[in-house]
Length: 137
Image (tube, rainbow, N blue to C red; front, side):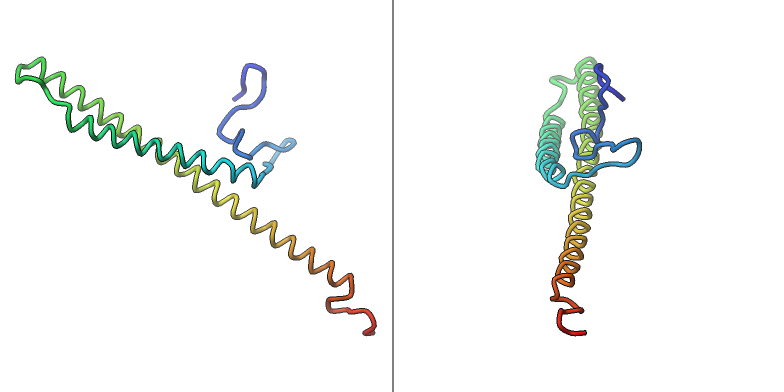
């Protein structure tokens, strides 16, 4: 999907997950880390909406026992239930993004740390502080 100017849009754009060349993705751990609190705020707002919907469902009653009022109350309650189902789907979506961003960030940070440790070990060996220290032939 693209914007009117031709630039790509979608859930990965702005999430630190941009397409690289013709294939694959480029992961920016700092950008991913910056997105996590935003998704958590979004998820928490969804939870607050659910509480409001529950309260609305508790107070939505027919003002009288006549058929039009009763019918209207039933429709209102059905609408609130549908909104609650939609809310649950939104929360699930937001939580999945949070989980995936945490997983991606943790995985790539760990991998970066492992590579860095390997490079530092190679540098120590090259400087004579490793297995082949200078002077020991």
